[in-house]
Amino acid sequence: KFKGIIFDLDGVITDTAEYHYIAWKHLAKKLDIEIDREFNETLKGISRSESLEKILINGDKEKKYTEKEKEELADSKNDYYLTLLEKLTPNDVMENIVETLKYLKENNIKVALASASKNAPLILDKLELRDYFEVIVDPSSVKQGKPAPDIFLEGARLIGLNPNDCIGVEDSEAGVIAINDSNMLSIGIGSEENLNHADVVIPSTKILKGTIENLM
Ligand code: B16
Ligand code: MG
Image 1 (tube, helix red, strand yellow):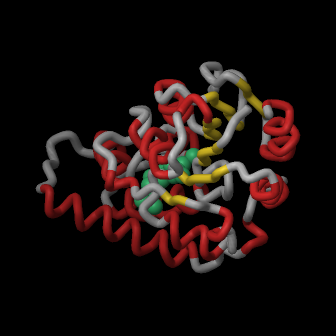
Image 2 (cartoon, helix red, strand yellow):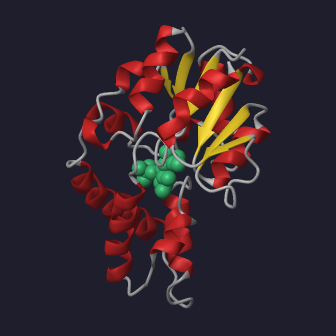
Image 3 (cartoon, helix red, strand yellow):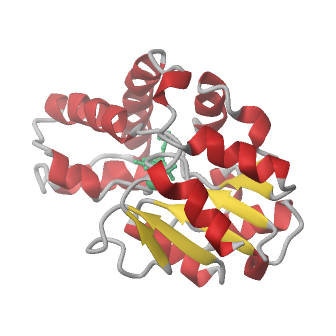
């Protein structure tokens, strides 16, 4: 029934959220800003620059940063994040993902990646998954980030399919909204409570392959 699947990266293929969290916390500390894991949830699926804006709101309201300063802050977070990514290996691929990708390949279902991360190609290389993806959408090539549907629509366009013929897989609320607004079927990975907009919610990737098989 479906001809293509468009995956999110962080929280679906691998759990880089923890590394993002450590890197943002490192930067926030230097700016005298406190962030915790609960706050980190609100950064999932959100671009680097938007994440920085959200963090700065938690700091001194009087302090204004120029665009150049903000760019430097975002770069410094990314430099630190990249040192953390050095530790990434194929062991960090989430459960049942390789099996799912193999199943999709065997059944000639097209696969694209729609991640907000500019580091996505590097991450897929480190996980040794690059060959499973026909397309990695460049997040800077689309106008609006998630929750706007742009990145999922671009993924479908690049694999030459109608959004109606695709499934989107996401772990963030913003991402599920993006999938729904792009007219794809949405699979949410996480809690019912956070992802109640998704067409199908599963608690973890452990049952992803079976879930997709049942939809085919
Ligand atoms: P980068 P996803 C997102 O990945 C992360 O969830 C989000 O926390 C991060 O800020 C964003 O990528 C940008 O990442 O700084 O590497 O460009 O869930 O869309 O795969
Ligand atoms: Mg995600």
